[in-house]
Length: 318
Image (cartoon, rainbow, N blue to C red; front, side, top):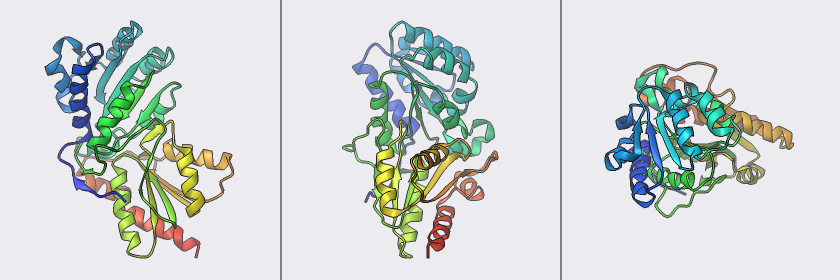
């Protein structure tokens, strides 16, 4: 079982720090930014290596096209912006100019899901996983804390082809130590249980763990899995868990429609795993501006909502 400590910095900053560190190791790769480098933390690289840092202004589509051109010349390129802008404004360029030719471009998509909170709907990337994961050749991972952000940076830069890392706006908790390994298509069991499997990723890991703790006090042992590798996905771990628990609850900070839960449901039905299943996310709605935890509560995505929904599932089996 993993333990939580209050985080001092968000995943976007941890990723930016590792970006700067790796810049001294590899003198070849470059970074493109869309005029918000201080917010995404890519400016940490830019301050250290200004000749390899290109601020393209508020022009995500053109920035992505330019990054594709440099990647076509053989360089590894990092492209940084808010996730909502990359997954909407730049989507055509990502699809046609990067994923189609399978270029070595890595995306730092900050402010994932409702973690943008106070910044409002325009900055909340609640459709990014659906838009980005649909693209052939694209890989995606979502760190939840600073150590996983650093490890997933290394995974991204050493994985050939397009790679999108979904980063969080604020600091939440630390759960992984420096020795924890992360792999493409991997996951981690954060809490073992026998009654139900809770699968999630990113900031929802902490909501799931909070719910699991309260459920344990009521005699319900939930197994919590951090499926940090969204594409490719760790179906082997999923199957091993649900064969033990017989029930699966998926929670994600994203639109419910076409999110990870839809992919999992398709897999379960196709492969005839007929289990009790529940999936929650945004229910075909935009959110609003406000405090992060209060927004999660309003849209039934916090630990209390998870706890109540899991109890309903357990009750149906009694």
